Amino acid sequence: SSVAIPTTQKAILVEKYGGPEENVLRDIPVPTPKDDEVLIKIEWTGANYIDNYRRSGLYKVALPFVMGQDVVGTIVQLPKVAMTETGLGKLSLGQRVWSPAAASFAEYTTAQWWKVAPLPANVEPRDGVSMCTVALTALALTREAYAVKKGDYILVRAAAGGVGLVLVQLGKYLGATVIATTSTAEKAELAKANGADHVLLTSNSSEDNVKEILSLSQGKGVHAVFDGVGADTWEEDFLVVRTGATIVSFGNASGAVPPFSPLKLSPKCLKVVRPTLFPYIATPEDFGALAKDVSDIVAAGGIKFAVHKVYPFTQDGVRQTQIDISGRGTTGKLLIHVDA
Ligand code: NDP
Image (tube, rainbow, N blue to C red; front, top):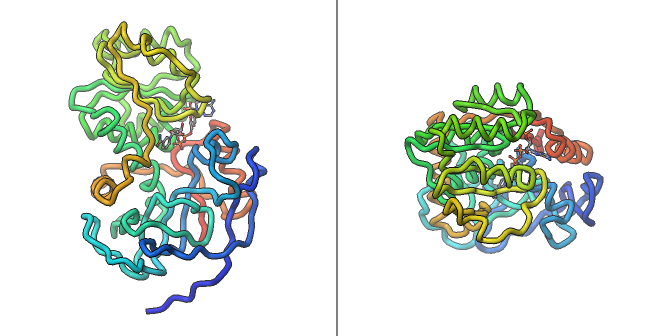
């Protein structure tokens, strides 16, 4: 079958590092897929905190580049290479898929065929956006960075955010007692509604929160902290963990964690892990296994996604997502409707 594919498209690029105003709408060529890639017509994408790191230059991406990394859309061109079975099922032309593919603030993008997963029939396309980065990350963190076990006490920071809300749900799904921190009463309610056992506000004194977290975790401290806040919460993480615990530092929303000596870990024999999603999904086997589990858990209702707002696919719409997510006023996922 044949689908008309245009030669040019609208995309949001960063041409120099800087503030949200550096997101610019341009007409660029529709990319030509490599032999092992599919071409996807994008319906939905979403904002991630990492957009800010890339646009500002904290994470260096070669300029100019197309922003975005969540893709829900339909396959309009299949790869030239033969596709093998990775556990996700066969891909076909016109099929609706989800993928953590790059350059998603555009009408079309390419992705290696094995990094593309069919959207389960009972999952809304807009919910597929939260599977791409948020759910894959949360599942990888709770398995690979620290394998959460039944009976564990875990602490989730920024618990009402995109990744935070899914970490809370997976923590409960895996049988842990989930203690959460967040900045407002409204966000605390949302974290509770998603399963958090105890929610503490960051507006309390750090001293009070440390005392409370210790008392909520058998007086010993938690088995693991999942911390995407970074600089602001780093020191407190060391006070709320038990001997042998793991600090999972997976983000820099308040700034990057400063350099430290391994001796900092010795009083409690701690482990610190600083993971990112991409190495966990770097092979067809690894992506296939993780994406299948995310699809199955979501299709079975094991993870629910909250949406902060739907933004238009315009220069101002995209700029606003980055202003809002770094302004600390959002909960859950910020969606961008590309094919509205
Ligand atoms: P969120 O929706 O969680 O938004 C960020 C949240 O961080 C805010 O809502 C806020 O929650 C909290 N925060 C604390 N201090 C600040 C501050 N000074 N400025 C802004 N926000 C602050 O974003 P995401 O779900 O997209 O990402 C969460 C974290 O996880 C980010 O650090 C991100 O980089 C990281 N991440 C890492 C991945 C990886 O592979 N390692 C993959 C995906 C995300 P509150 O008001 O409750 O404090």
